[in-house]
Image (cartoon, rainbow, N blue to C red; front, side, top):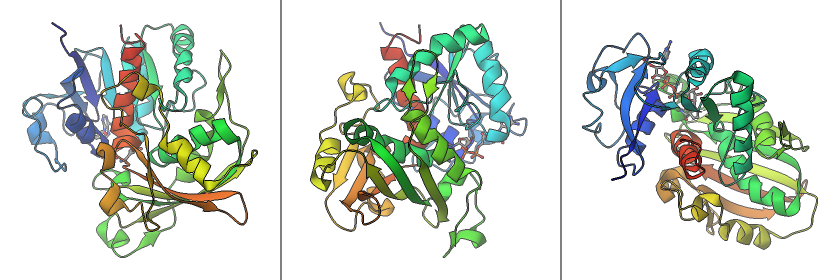
Length: 350
Ligand SMILES: NC(=O)c1ccc[n+]([C@@H]2O[C@H](COP(=O)([O-])OP(=O)(O)OC[C@H]3O[C@@H](n4cnc5c(N)ncnc54)[C@H](OP(=O)(O)O)[C@@H]3O)[C@@H](O)[C@H]2O)c1
């Protein structure tokens, strides 16, 4: 009999933590056996501690679990982290040093030289940093990170395009959902009927993380992709789903149709390995001129795909396109789970 692997969720009460609990409910390989959060909630039963905001009920198997402190004393080897960035850095490191495999959503370790920042469709080879990290930090445990929720859809779409046509410049304007700010997040009186043209630290994250993900693993570290990325990030009154208007300059000539075909026909490692959370198609090309739209499209492919629309010529760069994706699924918890599935398929969870 193949028993499921027990896993823990750090920051289990938060927006991303809840998404982990929801997405792992029926997971064929992993089972949530430990939940941990801050002093505010630890010691309580999960069902009492959490302000549950998912549209499905709290899984019955998780509801009675005691919320534990975020100390490396959990009875599992793998922990998914949805910890607040103000505390994630040292806690995740402590877990990795104690021998846990940590799959993190926080910004804190994404840019560490020996920590993989991975999108399985784009740079699975960056998992090659794991043995280096283990050696550097003298531990059997390690950390793997996934991209910021805005970086995710940009880097995911650019991956195949860069490989085929060599990206030279990127300009992106985002319209980001309120759920990206966690719970309770942005006060309703600040965002209702409004656009806030600033999200602290977001533009810097998108500009550097994209270059790390599309960078080259040289056997020791990752050389950043050489092209500049300019990002402008806005918070809009949308519940779930980040939309991105992107312009790209390419070194090799192509056409809008060729870019669409490249993404439409893409089959990556998640599909080849038939990872349980892999979407059938990682990129959904939307033909209608007014799509993708978050209200109608955010849950396509269970929130795990990047939706791509309006691929057309750009009068300043070469092409422009619209991207959209589910920020707490593919942009957060779903991305970590897919990374964990890749690790398992590659024998790195033994
Ligand atoms: N929301 C998104 O779309 C998104 C996307 C990608 C990445 N992220 C990143 O994911 C992380 C979590 O974001 P979120 O939106 O889920 O935030 P959130 O809703 O505010 O949740 C934060 C979690 O961290 C816990 N926590 C806070 N202080 C703690 C402490 N001192 N010790 C232990 N646990 C503590 C909270 O537990 P209590 O309930 O006990 O306070 C809660 O479980 C952040 O780093 C964020 O940048 C978020």
